Image (cartoon, rainbow, N blue to C red; front, side, top):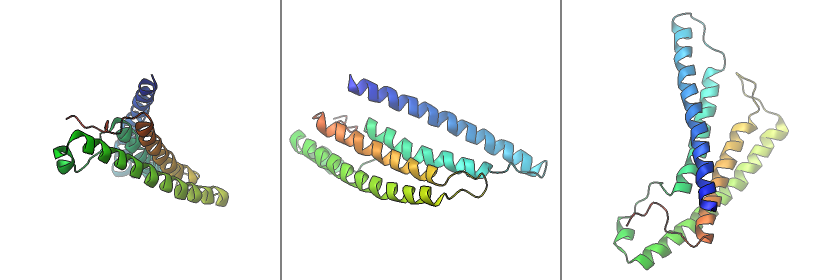
Length: 162
């Protein structure tokens, strides 16, 4: 039940990121035409595209973690007996939780600093903390996905098809 809800949420997030990416590509195309044909670039287009790329990178990494489709070097692990492979996957999940949690804490501190300073971006005047918050959310989701995997007793559901 929970797995289905998580999968549904990740598909929705994936759809939002895909639409944002498509809009960023269209914006880039229109900006190129505006810049080189009409000699008048769209103000803030580059900055908005960077924001979409940040969202894709960090929120997309959370989707990949939830699905267990991240890249790994597992030639040796796959040659091990199932029990050892499962233990390695559990250790991997625990390390992911620890590192992602550490990143969340550090990123949240920095995000809060940017919030209290009321820094804004140069072109669009967007609050700088919003892009840093995407890092916090992305790594938070990564930690939660790994934690769910451990708590559900399935640390080896990380893309292992053997």
